[in-house]
Image (cartoon, rainbow over all chains, first blue to last red; front, side, top):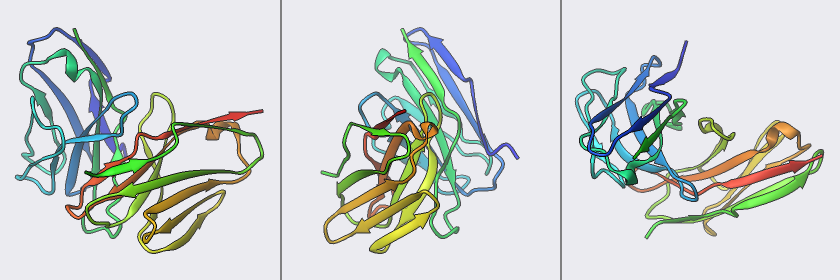
Length: 114
Length: 109
């Protein structure tokens, strides 16, 4: 069982380019999340999905979009990357019916926008 | 606004005990989590508190006081591998996690 996988591991991107970060989980969790982590700041929620077919905006959604076509996949797209989107991006998932609803994280994608 | 406060950095000695504090002000409370994050890696779940009191898990314990908006993570018999950042997160009334910036724990031999 892999848990949550993310791709790519790292990426350097020119400003203005479009980029999709991939996230796949095999735990059949209904909820999935995208966070960004910047030095000195806590994890900040970008978008989330409580179940396949639905998505919601988090604390910092501007410049990002997501889709949830099925239970396993939750891609994050930067339509036109800007340097302020340089960050480490973590995908997470949880079982909303599982009691504590603990979130489990993927290994992260380190993105640099030049 | 919502706020989670933790010390930025702490230093402790191998074999000792360390307490990492977390204070929070959030719109609602639906549980508090502690995660461990080694440098360059993903956060991993350590503990969950929703009721007041102490939860013990081996060398790690977590305490919660909802009336004081306060929690701490207690690490006993420190090992070098415990060098990591420790993240406190509170689930608010919207059922979203609000995260502290983390406490970097440095263990010295």
